[in-house]
Length: 148
Image 1 (cartoon, rainbow, N blue to C red):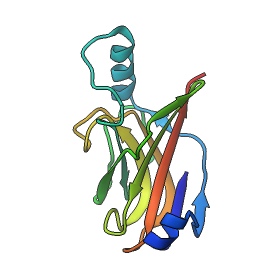
Image 2 (spheres, rainbow, N blue to C red; image 1 turned 180 degrees about the vertical axis):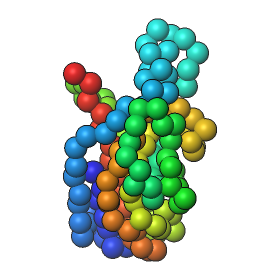
Image 3 (cartoon, rainbow, N blue to C red; image 1 turned 135 degrees about the vertical axis):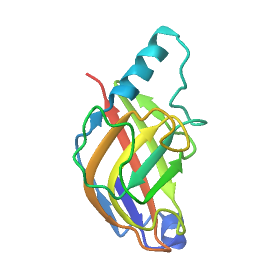
Image 4 (tube, rainbow, N blue to C red; image 1 turned 120 degrees about the vertical axis):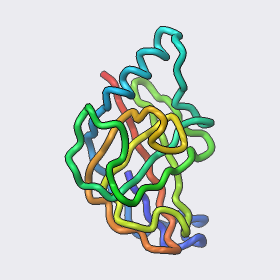
């Protein structure tokens, strides 16, 4: 889900001008391996508030499980907002916010990574036209993964 605010004032008031919701993404092999390591207590980096980021980029190349991150020429990584990630039942929710000076380009892809950039292990990749973020606008990216 991408929630778009015209400016800081609208963001603080909680009045977006657009909210896009969409389904589906691809878990990436490197992220699956990292999850399995975490499951058995092997050495791995958790996807927690201190480590996880949501990456956004401008590539519309179809997602494939063998990819290892964002493919676009323009990329940005959003730190987790307070209280994220969170778990409810079988769903984990990650959320990050791009301020008015961050990620001002076409958003075509998104990922969750356990690092500050693609050098971490990317959990997933979603490809979809999310719009072009203009300078001064504030966008939140919320990514949910349900395992069932």
